[in-house]
Amino acid sequence: MAGITDLGVGIGWRSEIDLTVERLPGVDFVEVVAENLHIGHLPESVTLLLERGIPVLPHAVSLSLGGADPVDLNRVEHLGKIAEAVGAPMVSDHVCFVRAGGLDSGHLMPVPRTKDALDVLVANVRLAQQNLPVPLALENVAALLEWPDGELTEGQFLAELVERTDCWLLVDVANLYANARNIGTDPERFLDEIPLERLAYVHVAGGEQHGDVYHDTHAHAVLPEVLGVLDELCSRVTPPGVLLERDDNYPSDTEIASELAAIRAVVDKRRG
Amino acid sequence: MIGSNDLSAARERLAKQQEALLIALLAKGPVPAGFDEQRFDVERRALLSKRRGIVRMLGPAVADELGDRFRPLFDAYAVENPRRAGSRAREDAASFAEWCRAAGELSVKRKARWKFWQSN
Image (cartoon, rainbow over all chains, first blue to last red; front, top):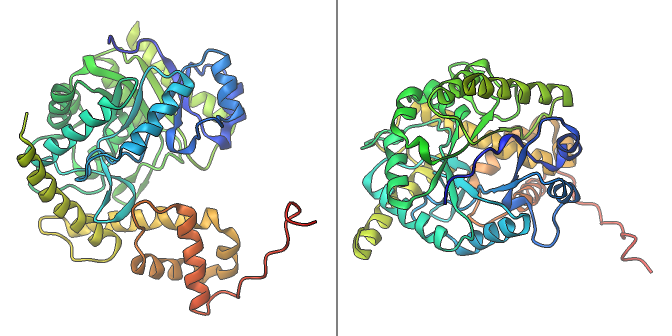
């Protein structure tokens, strides 16, 4: 398929801010966390947004596509059913693992950037794609630690993944910023190495610096530096969409609206 | 395209690496070779803090009753009881409360009052 074009500027729909999302000006699309929704019981607020013609994109956090085990097809099926229920053009999850050895990490863990990990990820992504009704986009995660013996940069790893699976990319510029601060990833090199023509859309989120560690909290304001990475991305390609993620410590509607406006300003400036 | 035997072998090698990482991060296993120990500790604390925050949110009454003891008790519980794959956050919160009661740190659960839909 040709990519999804012109999603515009969006926000992650969360039940805690459902009314805010409904009444905010300038929300062109939303994302829902697939694991939080149930087939046949869509939240009223999501139904209302759909009736207004707002695209709703399911975003998953539990497929563990980078995990050593074959992907859990029950989880893939749930994601696919949510996509059908909201008429989504695309779904997404992350390049990460969350389960191993019978344990659940509770967070999105980076995978080693080795041939083994890439082969396993590719196999899992293909299996997921075969069982999904719409295209799959995969997101770069924020890592606090780096696996030893990486054979590829993060950009090269994602480029290989796209080459071998034809998946789309969901680029999180806050995660890129976090990795630059915490593990020394070079955001410009990352953007040079990934196939930008496979960019589905972009995530932006806030975080907080604690000592020498930047935490991608989704519970604080978006830093100007993160918008700087967005600007860098927009200098290379017009992103089909940009979405703000806020998951906790919700600010006023006014503050959320101004963050959305700041995002739109960066995109529009580069669009010319 | 890689063969299925190669893929199975890759899965096995990756499983060992990922398992060792999670045991080290969640259950105080030894830090696998090659990782930066300081960064490892940062990640360990970040995962613990996220899990603790979720349990606090899901069980505010337990957190309130424990007060200042909540954090050290939760951290001790968490290392002893890493979250199992497939378990739910609510089960984690319930199991923490149970663990505290068994340790005599929390008052014994009051008998649940009849909910209106159960009463006749």
